[in-house]
Image (cartoon, rainbow, N blue to C red; front, side, top):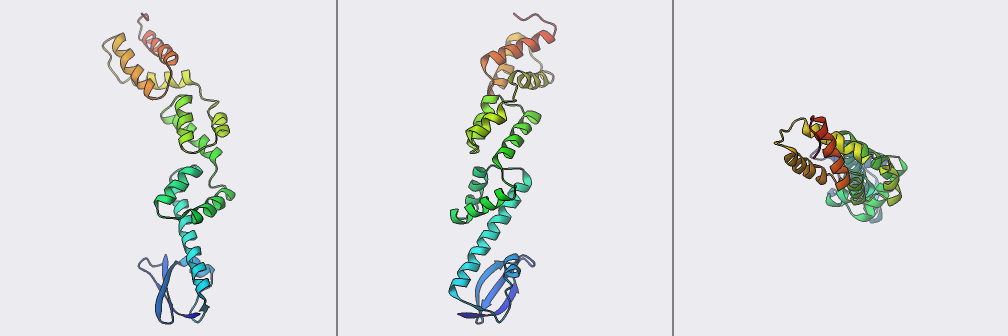
Length: 211
């Protein structure tokens, strides 16, 4: 056992505190953990309690790191888990944090899949096929992916981005348009049939009969 003899602010005032036991530095904690656990000078701490405080601190830091990642945009469970691993948190800390965030509604793969798909549709349409691959890579379950991408209209999406591209690009003729727009649409996962229909439509809109 040891007695807390001092609690001092760390290098980042208001965020971390240094705990001294029997006059010696023992551990550093988030101020949130220190306040929640009601730590103050004169309290006895066993080795087991010190270990527990360390685990609480790591969990709290992991939770706050996850919230910061989620501030930028929704993330899938797999994506969030991988990012937290890269930040040095162990699996036994990450899993309860993911569970807590899920229970609070901050992490939900269905919500993430909808966000991802709607974002793509609004700013940079992909084919249903490519969107499926992207969501699969993010670790989203197959049944969630299937439901989410069911509303994607490949022909509408291909036409929308091809029309925008064609409006800002000079083509020397049909072959040039077919090559450049075709490659552009192919990179976004659209199949041959959809690409051909789209190019023919764009070409006709330019007042030339399709060959």
